[in-house]
Length: 511
Image (tube, rainbow, N blue to C red; front, side, top):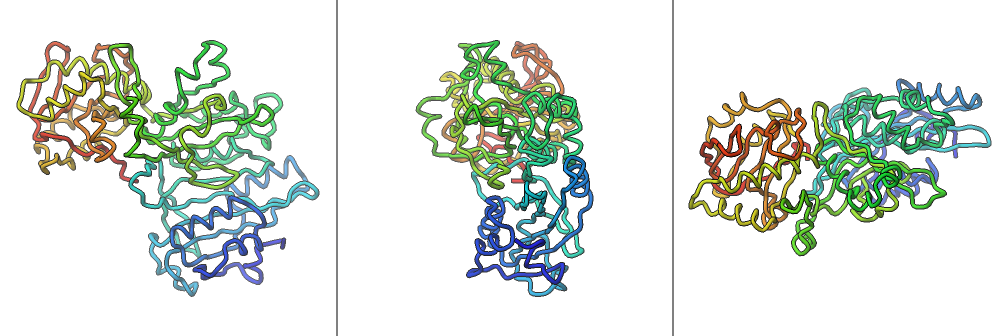
């Protein structure tokens, strides 16, 4: 391999036509060697119909410069021998002067590739960071995508996606790069590996190149200010035998995803391997899944309260794997329960409980309210009661801000295209707190096929509430034809709704 990217030899910039019959494999092998994550990047760009590749040789600044200093502190003979920015474009760009005329929508991916060299130890390229634009797919949910600004040929462009990073085995392993990704999702800003390693370095036998233990990961997350529920299955099993089966990791991952802030999954396929940590930030959805209907896939809150979680239709988790690349789908049951060692399910800042708890709380409120629904000729209200009697209601908990919920309510149309009364959202603006748990209520036949619901229960996300009926977190409930407000369960107050049937479920605007 050459000391620097061969396509930039003799200059700091080059534009390439990468339409077929341009060979991605040849280009990657000739310039970056045998790196699966870089091959994956080029494959993703081709899927997104990229036609032009811009290659820029750049200088180390910011987090790259800090990383170089940190590595040199541990390995005095270290040298960075390459730093290249790649950007992929749907538009055919023939000349450098044309780049400034191209809109951001044409940018489908960018990556900064870095080459680390230590004589007789390492001489390898890796993806320091990359963002690939989410491709449109109705059944791929990525509520955690963020907007990035990247300077290319002197102009700032915008691209929406999820930050991907790769380890180098020197100052960062899978844990550090996963934390950098989830930090960007959660806080909307970058963090250096120096900061992560400094927080983890208080532990004995710390070596940043081989990764972090579950305890170190938990310590770093707490010190960074994340709100999360950690589950260390090895410890939990010693305290409570059978904990793995009672609290499956899929439920915790899904809770973080639907909250819009993601999760971390740590697993081992064999005891002689270190903990492998990956960020999970989305999921795929199969509207034709058989199990939720045939097996009911109940989530139990005591014997009298059961429901079907919307998680039952999840087929894959969308994640990054720092070894192989970004935006992979891992089948829901590919990683067995016995291999999972650590989970961190994140919840938004300001919330007092997570999505699993919000569903449980809402289910108790729901089953206490339904017998008090007014007698009516509304067939959807009668169906709601029927599904509750069969304990087949579908629940989906989402954390939203008040303005997001009011926007959702304003945009709602029932099956006959009726909107809500104008005064409703104005009145709710004064009633509702800033952060909400919106627990959507649906049925197995309309949720997966049509992505529609029969209503929702709205909770104050800033208040902690046991799964009982003290009503300290309950704010309101909406069902076909009626809203419920009450301070005591036996004394409901209702106002009419103009939405008389099912309505669309909440969709993150980034999807």
